[in-house]
Structures are given as C-alpha cells and as structure tokens.
Length: 143
View 1 (tube, rainbow, N blue to C red):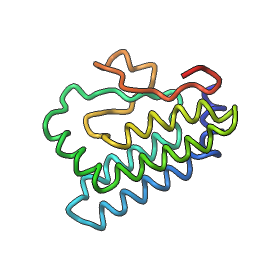
View 2: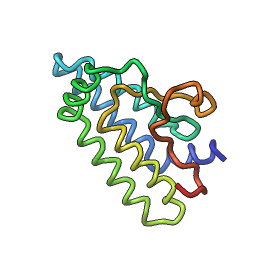
View 3: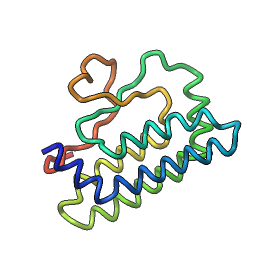
View 4: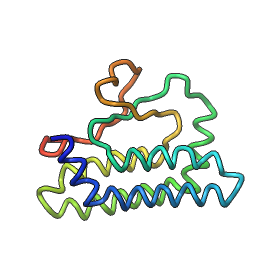
C-alpha cells in the first residue's frame, strides 16, 4: 500500500514539489551566503519525492544554531515552499482520493517552515530516535 501511495503522490504532486525544493537549493547557491540552505532543500526534495514510510524526528543534538538557521531558511525559502504545500493540499482535498495526500502536504508544510534540527528516517527506525515530529498519513488511513 505504501508503494502505491508513493507512486500516486509522485504523479499528483511529488515531482512538482521536488522541483520546487531543488529550485530553492539553486537559489541558495546563487545567493552564495545562503549555500548551507541548499543542504536541507535537497534533503527535503528527496523526502518529498517518496514520503510514505518515512517519518520526521527531532535531532537530539539540535541547538541554538538550528533556530538561527530556521529563521534564515524561513525568509529565503521556507514560507513559499510551505505555501506551495498548502496550495497542493487544497487542490488534492477536492477529491476523496486526495485527502490523505492533503494531510501529508500539511505536515510537509510545517517541515518546510523549519527543517533544521530534524531528520528524516525510515518509519521502522523511528523508535530509535527521541521524538517523532510528523509522518505523512498512509493513503486510505485517517490522519
């Protein structure tokens, strides 16, 4: 079921959002001073391509640097990537089959706002990490 959900996600909005994250990485590289922002952009592009079966966990070692990096990220790329997730979510909510994908987009919008201090891991390994922040809903399951 996870594979089917990921394939549908890929066709309905995953490719577009991954392209948006790669574009954010390119903008970060072009602005030179924001080159470190390209790292989470590329990481999130991969997560956005194939989200089901993976979860977001808080990194135990994240500190004040993550807060500062999240503020810079929000200004440069986070707000418009989150807005794209919300727009795709609203479009997918128009169909019954799209509702689980809407939930996933809304969770990813939160991650797009502040990616620093969080890691993406396989769901089966989430218990080894401190706190699970969010996981995309499985297609066909409530929230």
